[in-house]
Length: 251
Image 1 (cartoon, rainbow, N blue to C red):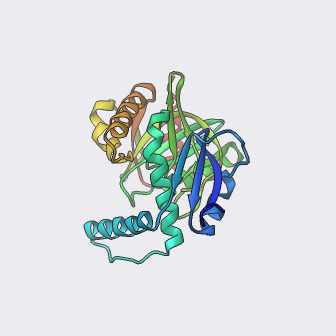
Image 2 (tube, one colour):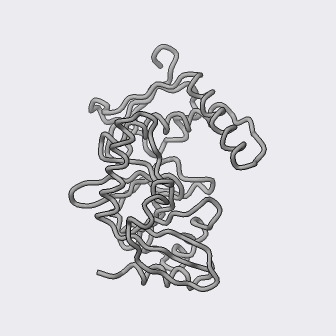
């Protein structure tokens, strides 16, 4: 405890992060990522009651836009959102950004599926888990971190892994990004990054601070140049997993 705050360190995408939190539930939430690493933290975040209030207001705005009823969330839960928001606002300066999608690794290579909410990302990666069994690892089902380097892009798990809580403290090189769409028949094709860049940008967390936003857009542009992008039409039958996997195996 420091000044009434709960202080701990965690590692996300290879970065040591120091967090000053209010609620003990936050420590429990990130328990698989805690570290006793004595290196000086590269990122430090301190949560205030105002940060938690902001997350409730943000939830209210989203509900209004989407036509859903507003919901008052428990403050410990809102704090976990505030922690991640403060972290990902700073991550672009470490070649890393948050991307909304479901990432699964097969034989040590990661595949990222992204789509509009409700399309079936989690359902599709479940089909992959059923098809590949022990060959696959669910890295993150909702909010993975992507680190862009000269060698390529690497996907990392985080504690923020969606309503199904599917994820692992693991990472893998990203082999492909796949945009998921519902269709009667299963089919997949590679697409030009310029064609789908606006959609990918919608799925990317865009920081409020100007320099961080510009860095994020630059990282997304580099991702599009380094990683092949596909569009998958699928009917969520088991065959869809086979079609999508085989379609992304081109050299």
